[in-house]
Amino acid sequence: MIKPQQVPQHIAIIMDGNGRWARQRKLPRVAGHQQGAEVVKSVVGYCSNLGVKFLTLYTFSTENWKRPREEISFLMNLLGFYLENEIQNLKRNKIRFLSIGKTGQLPQKAREIISRAVELTKENTGLTLILALNYGGRAEIIDAVSALCRDVKEGIFAPDAVSEEVFSRYLYTAGIPDPELLIRTSGEMRLSNFLLWQISYSELYVTDTLWPDFSEAEFQKAITSFQNRNRRFGGISVS
Image 1 (tube, rainbow, N blue to C red):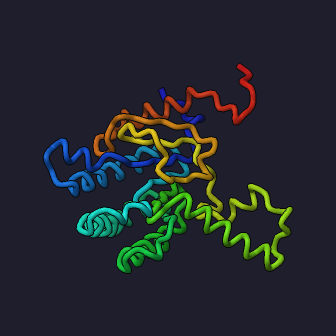
Image 2: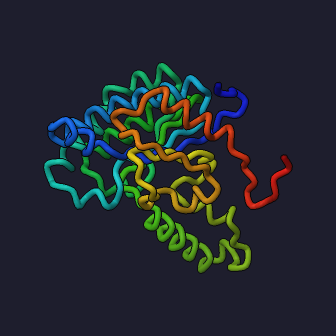
Image 3: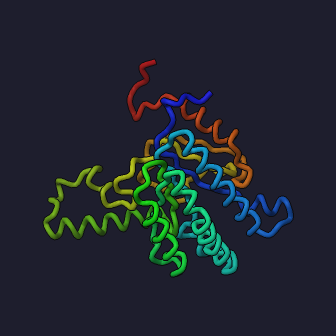
């Protein structure tokens, strides 16, 4: 049973397994991505209904450009189709949309739709849905270090005044609390260059379920598992 008062405020998800889901059914990989997009809609609804404040989805990594050109083109079109068709639902449900990553390197049409979705939902006060697009954790840290070094050089910060809190302001996620729960589907036991700074103390939940099969029941299992953890943050348990 989920305890409403202990629902994580920020959930991050590595959505893995679309290709394997399609291969198991002898379908093209794009069929897995299409079904995965439907699951995104469902999970956004689950989080919104539970009172989760932030949901970050690993949507397209900096490494995903290595995929076949046709698949990349389909993913970019699917992103645009999803946002265009969901903007009104986001507004109706008071969901704010944001993106993180090197989005300036995405195709122009995708950039335009992303900007429009951000603008049209910026006043919403419910769940914040964050898509990590052309995102890499190492690239984020390097970008943050570069920006911070420039500010130190310009005298905005003294070198010995740089703290974790200061550094966090230079990340793509500035102003967003770190995830309390990281979910990974498809059973892979790796972080895949996702939110490397932010998940230092996140609780991890890995399920063998492929993303297109990720159901409300599996989502509830992840939340229940989180609520049964003893989060010590390096300290000693008091129980």
